[in-house]
Every structure is written in C-alpha cells, then in structure tokens.
Length: 116
Image (cartoon, rainbow, N blue to C red; front, side):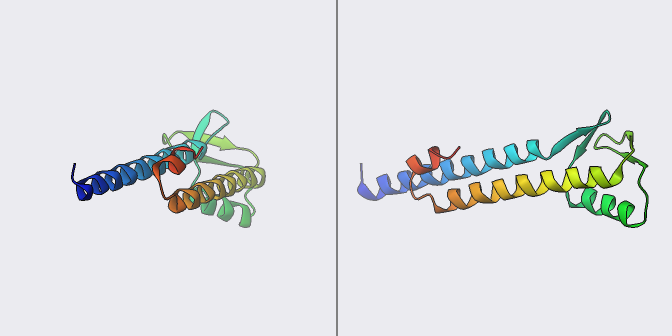
C-alpha cells in the first residue's frame, strides 16, 4: 500500500479511537452525575446546584422540588442535600478533567486504549 495512504489510515484510526475514548468518558461522567434521593432521581448540574444554593441562602431548609422525571420529591434537609450534590459534582468533574487531559496527551492508539 502507498505509504501516504497507510499514514492516513493510521491517523484516521487514531482519531476514531480518541473520539471513542472521549465519548466513553462522557457517558461515564453523565452516569456518575445521577443521584437518587427520597425516591427521586436528580441529574446533578449547575442549575440544580444554583437552585439549592438559592433555597439555602433564603433560609429554606425543607422544600419539595422536581426531579429529572418532573416528579415532586420532598427534601427535608436542603443544606445537607446541597453539600452532597456539590461534593459529587466536583469529584466527578475533577475525575473527568484528569481523564480528558490524559486523552488529549495520548499520541498513539496503544496509549489511548490503556486509559481506564
């Protein structure tokens, strides 16, 4: 095969593997950002954190909020729920950042495949 064509195929395989690994990391991160509480399922994002922070700052310690399925869920301790949500958010975000930096620096398919 032509050397130029071989290099093009090798690069295409590298990019595909890189994109697959990044997609896999995103799916894992999305799964870790789901939190079940009091029979509800919440997707942890900045919107939820801001809303809980608003409730906490205004002195509301118990509230009914809607989960990701638009079902009402009573949260009896807003400050502790806020702490739980923010802790999970930053742990998962930091882990994803570490994986992303490793993926960005990978220069061949073998090093990409070794990422856990």
